Length: 117
Image 1 (spheres, rainbow, N blue to C red):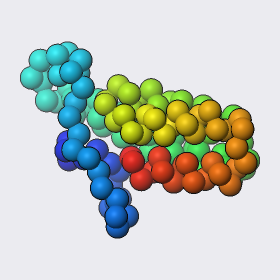
Image 2 (tube, rainbow, N blue to C red; image 1 turned 90 degrees about the vertical axis):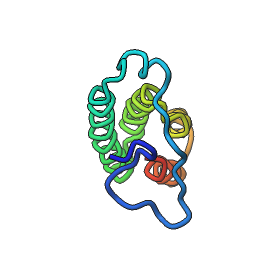
Image 3 (cartoon, helix red, strand yellow; image 1 turned 120 degrees about the horizontal axis):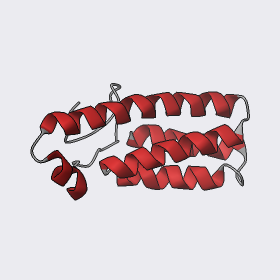
Image 4 (spheres, helix red, strand yellow; image 1 turned 60 degrees about the vertical axis):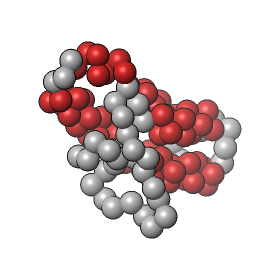
C-alpha cells in the first residue's frame, strides 16, 4: 500500500484525487518509528473496510438499511483511527442517512465511500 494515498487495490476513477496521507500524531507516537506497526494497522483497516464496503453493497441490494448503518459505523471508526478523515465524514453521513434517505440516495453515498477508500 502506498502510504501517501491509502486506497483499495483498484485504480481510482478518472478525476479522483487522493490527498497525501499522514498518519495521525497519536499513531506516530505509539509506533515510535516502527513502520511495520503502522503498516499492519493499515492492512487491517484495508481488509475490514473492503469487507464492510461489500456488506454495504449487499445491504443496498437487499434493502437492509440497518446493515448499511452498522457497516458505515465500522468504517467510520477505523477511518478515524488511521486519519482518513474524509472517509470518516462521509461514513458518518451515510450512517445517519441510512434511517432517513431512500435506498437510491444511499447508493450515491456508498459510491463516495468507495472513491475515498
